[in-house]
Length: 150
Image 1 (cartoon, one colour):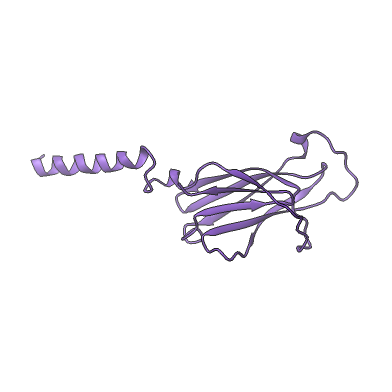
Image 2 (cartoon, one colour):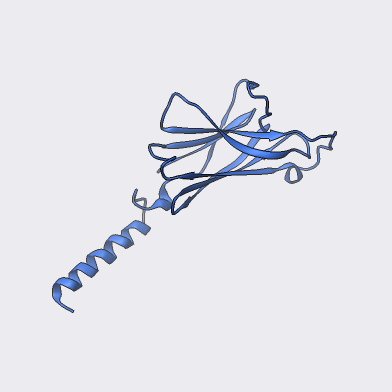
């Protein structure tokens, strides 16, 4: 192996190692940080399908073709079902805003403990869907959680 080949290999290995360390923007694992919560002042009721009472957590997992947004919601009682993250239009093109929609139980259900009421929802977004997006936010009736790119 020649001197030029050794230098090229060393540069490639160094560049790849740099993607995994620190907070470089080239590393897809660093695209979104941890979630943070915002309280919503007034309840929204414009959609026929109810929105979950509270958003408990939000995470964004990078994939080779985009990202998986997953969140946990907390309805007021047990029995809520058919959770879905629905995109909401915003004035800011750098924000991906999602409503955490959920259907109520068909019959009266007990309140139960928090873990027994938690409902999971997720959605996959492609790299094209996330082009220009700096913040992903999921909102319920009482709060909104968001993550931003590092």
